Every structure is written in structure tokens, then in C-alpha cells.
Image (cartoon, rainbow, N blue to C red; front, top):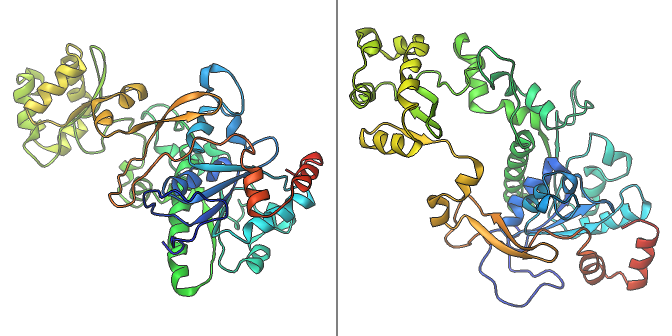
Length: 415
């Protein structure tokens, strides 16, 4: 990466650590749910991500569920997941002193992530034009529901709104029921992934240009750019509809109930899967019709086929169906609840779940990364920060503010 040189920030430990892919990169994250995952992705790869929160804490600290079922800004499970490997400082952007502190922070930053409504930072003299004048190498990503221009730019866009107007909600759900939304702020997460990617691309480009750039990320566009949205719009009209878990071509190709839960079965089109599937379930009379030999015919008669499959799966457990399906080389898998996935043998073998000591909550079990970098390994370096935990380290040790200055800023609510 462009900033991954071996420079060490003031106050950094001299103890040698394993190489980190983004070591030496400093990112400011202005606390907002739309950019929290982007900050986490960069922090997990070794960037020094400073989460700049209002004195009352970023919104994600107040999102439940809560550790031990006790509501508290240090116990929100969303916060505990999204803020690992970050540092936290408090700063009031409504205060002139707070805005001055942010500009000082920007002077030593490589990138800034923010999710405020368009115009919010400009009204406070903190838009990209103002900040880049002080830090020409700054890469700034604004992640909003609809982007910085267009007729929708000023519309409020919480996660589910972007999911709806991005086209994803229309295709989600069962065919004869209203559209449904996705759980757990998927629109924000997808926007964050695209923002993190855009930041890395811009930083790579800075190696040549020597200058930063402004990144305008529309969550609506991030969702609409998904392959299934694009294909359903430009493809045959019969695909532009809700199909639930039913695959648009494969039959069987959906979730089926079984004796102890659900399985997903996929009898692939264009292969000998259908013949092997019939061998497995004993060639039932209802499917003993040459019309079912063709994939399109099976898809048109999906309800007839699925009714037979449901009767078959209902008599077996997930484990039995998985073992039998594998023996017949039919793609099938148990549908895991989140806890089952976390505790699965596969996750355990890959060391996906990591543990770290939290100063208030004790030993925390947290998800690891879905990737493994051989030369610059992912690491859970620090627990989710307490609100304002690093005020002294960042403002005092790194920016040079004296203890009495910090006290005065704290007293007037600027930090």
C-alpha cells in the first residue's frame, strides 16, 4: 500500500510485531453506521483507524443486542464487532474547538471515512475542499444513501431505505408475498465494503499522483450494482421477480424442511445430477415422466417436483440428508443457525473465532477475518475501544495538547 512504509506514529510501541498489510496507514472514521465496517476492514489489515465519536458515542454503540442483555454503550454487540482494532477519541463537531481538533487530526491522516448527510460537513467548514487544502494527500470517502448529487441526495436513507430503493428488496422474499428486507444492516455493510475498496484504490493511485482524491459512494448504487439486480433488469422479464429460496433454473434448487431443521439442495442443470437424484430418492412414480428430463420443464413444474422432495426430506435429519446427498454427489447442505455456523468444525479448524480481553467485559469471543494472508497475517490486535479511551494518547501525546488544555476541552464539551 502507498502508506505502508515503516514510519512509526508518535507513541507507538517499539516492540516488533508481525508485518501488517496496511501498517503505517492512518484512517479517521467519523462515527456513523454507514462507514463503521469500512473502518473495521482497514483496521483489521493493520491501519491505525481512529474512530472520532461525539462525546455521547457513535450511534452503533446504542444498537442492541447487548452483552449480558444489559444495555450500555460499551456492551452493544454491534459495536463490539465493528470497532475491534480501532482507537476511539471523542470530538464535538458542533463546537469550534472540536472542528479545530479534527483539522489537526486530518493533517496527519491518510484517509477519512464519513457518512453524514450531504452538506453537513461543508456547513461546518470540513468538506473535502477545505480539508484537502490542509492535507493534499488526503483520501476522503463519503458514504451516503444516494450520493452527493441528484434529486434524492437529501433524502434520509437508513439502511432499509437504501435496500428498498436499490432494487434488492424487490427480489427478496417469496413469490406470492410482499418484499422483505435483509437482517443486520446489509446495505450499510455492502456500502462499507465498496468504500474500503475505493479507499485502497485511491491510495494506490496516490503512489503515482502524490495527491489524494474525494470518493462519493452511493449505497443505492452499491446495491444496484450487484450481479442479480443487473441480470434481472436486463435479462428475461420472468427473472425479475421474487423466488424465495428457489433457484431461477435448478429444480430441485431451494431450501427444504427436514426432521430437525432445513437443508438446501441444488440439482444442477445441464449435468447428470437429475439421474443421480432419482436414484437417491428411489424413482418415485410422480417423477417418472420424460418431461422432467429437461431442466426448463422441471423448472416450470417446480411445485410438483418440490412437493415430492419435501416428503422425502421430511423423514430424514440434516446429517442423514447431507451424508446421503454427498454419497450420491448431489450438492446439499444443512442450513445453520448463526451459532451453529460459528461452532462448526470447519470454523473451529480454521481458527475463525478469536478471543481477546476487554477491560470491562472480560474475555470476548469475536469473529475473525474470512481471509488469511500468509505474509501479513490478520490479527485481533486490540479490543473494541472504550468511548474516548485514546483521547490522551492522540490529543496529548500525538498532537501535543497539555493536560490542562485537554481538561478545558473536556469541561466545555468539545471532547
